[in-house]
Structure formats: C-alpha cells, structure tokens
Image 1 (cartoon, rainbow, N blue to C red):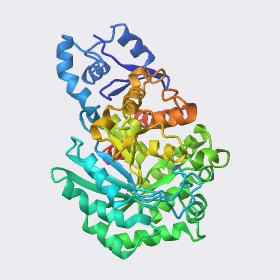
Image 2: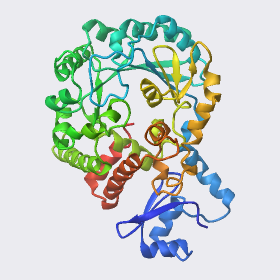
Image 3: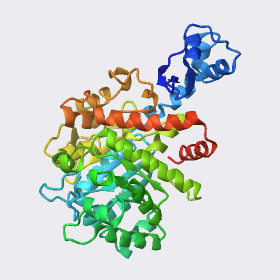
Image 4: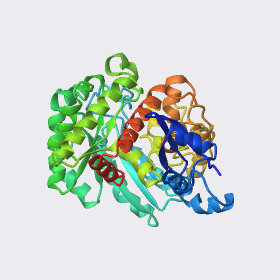
Length: 461
C-alpha cells in the first residue's frame, strides 16, 4: 500500500519525500510503476521505498508501529515547552547598521534589575528543564550591569532548571573584565561579521566613525584570550552580492569555521532602505551558490568549513532530527519555542515580533511581565494565532510541497510584508526552495567528497 508522500519533478524524473524526512529519487518510469502498484517490491528501488516508508506491506497499524517513532522524532519540538528566552536589555546601540531590524530610533531604554527580576520569575514557570537566556539589544553591553544581574540571579531563581546564557554583541564595548565574567559563568558569545573590513564597515557603520570591523576583532581577541570561542553570523545586503568568495575568506582569515549566509529580512531599517540594500531571491541564490562553491574549494584545500543554513536543512534531511530553529518548524517556534522580552518588560512571541514592535506595531505582544505570566502568554489569542497560521499542513503552497518536511514559515514577516500572517513571503519561499534544490542536486550527484561533507554538516547543529 502507498503511504503518504510528496513529490516533484527533478532532474528528468521525480523527487519523493515523506513526513519522516526520508527522500528518494525515481525515474518517471519508476514513478509510474510505483503509483500504479506495478513496481516490484523486491527490486532495488522497491526495497528502498519500502525501507524509507513510502509504501508498506501488511496492516496500516503495523506501519504506524514501525514508522510512528520516526514521525514523532521529526516534530519532537512539539512535545517541549518554551526553552529560548530573549532578553533585549536595551534598545541603545553604537552602530547604525543599514539593515537594522531592531530599528534603533526609539526613545533610549535600558532594562532595570526590577524588570529583569520579574521577568526571570515569570519565565521560571516554563515546564522546560533546560532553557537558554539570550542577551540582546541594541548593543547589550551598553547595559552590562543588568547582564551581570541576569547571569548571576537566574540560577538562584531556577534551581530546578539548567540555565545557559548566550550573548549577541558587536563586541565594540568588550573589556578584559567583561570577558573574564563571561568565561566564569559559561556565557557563549556570538557576533556579526559581514565580510572583509570595507564591506563590514559599510553595512555596520559605527555612530562615532570608528571601524566596526577593527573593534569587533579587538573584542574577539579579548574573548579568546579569556578562553571563549566566538561564533559569528553574516547578513547579506546588495553590497554583499558581488563578493561571496571574499566574505567566506574573511571568515576563514578571522578564525571562524562556520558561516550563516543570512538573507535580509524586510523589517526596520532594511524595509525603509530596501531599494538600496535589498535584492531579489534570485540574486541571493546566485550569491549563495557562489559562496557554496568557495566552501567546497576550501574543503579540497584541506580547510574544514561549513554553512549554517545548509546544516539546518541537512540535519532534517539526513538525520531526521527535529530542530528548534524557529523558521524551520511547523508550527513555527514563536511563543511555544521562543519568547522575547524587551527593556520595559513587554513580552513578544519572538525576536521578529519584538523587532516589529520597535517600528511601532505591537501586533505580536503577548503581555507584560508585571501583568501576566507564562500560562497567560501561552493561552493568549496572539500565541494561538501565530501557531495556527504557521502549520504547514494548512497553508496553500506548503501543504503539498515536496520540501514541506524540511521547511517552515515566519508569520511575523508575512504580516509585516502583506498584512496577513498566512500570506506567504514569496521571497523567503524561493530562497528556501533554492537552497534545498542545491542540496538535493548534490545528493543526487553522489560525489563521495561532497556527500561526506554534507554528512558532517548534518551533525553540527
């Protein structure tokens, strides 16, 4: 009997996927035989499809017993409570990034210890036993005293939980003393690197005229001196498109072994300046393919390096593992996987929701740490609406897509661009499909060196 599957034309034949994340390549003749019940179950392709759950022999109950656990594994996040809490400890920043999603133009505000304490007491109600508190801004080191308070106070208020901390910073305000504190308390650190110095400083200019690139490198050196390994994320602007190889090389030169080639999100400053900093999905994918080729070349030179976007997809494709990456799950992780708390104690579904609020639109606000708590946030109409609008099985264009088992949508971006949480972002859809097309082409070609690399990437998330 045929089980549920998705399919699409691919390389002169068909690509099949299913909700366990398994995939198979068929010729058109094999596909016709398979769907008509004429494919020999003892043939090589018949055994492959049987093993991967595209069809089954025996009863449906037996099929469920055999593959049900794999299906659950692919959506394991649905059984977990909110585990990522973003604390935007200030909206102040000493950078004026051309694509700033957090806007950075509102009345300056810093979180107080009173707000921080109340927020910690509220998030302690999550049933999750392991949580991450991500410290953001603006530039969070502007308000280091509250960072110190959060890092030391949280374990005291949540002795029954394993609490980890991560800092997202431009590193310009890093000092040896701050680095020593972060090391002592096991705080992981991520920064931004958009490419070579000229490009980085163009995308992320300092308000005081100094080189953001130079200050990032100085801060990174302090952290490494303290024994902290720093990761980095990249944001692609129109100015980035012509130099993917130089961007990858800048990461290698700065000691990084992974890059996240992030497309722009049309929020905040990026939305206002889209004609200058923005681009089409086709332009981004051409950039991405060139960067990918450069990474392959580095591997041939013996330099290990990976790309995070591909790793996220490959973890689902090759490992069948559920990910709590907000945009690549169904429903998305807004509220039920991630919550963002701003300096004044307002609570939003996610980082994107609080960024939209910086532009004056509070559509994704769940409440405030002084008025309500975790249970009220989860049961709020906003949380329910975001969840229901991001279930791929209910969205036209997603429900029958061959890449549905690996993908996801962002209701905040849909709302910001189109005024509707269920009106899909065409650009994001094209980008996800384009990256998945690239990966499946490599899987189809079966180059041993490339397959080995993709397998390694699938185990890095």
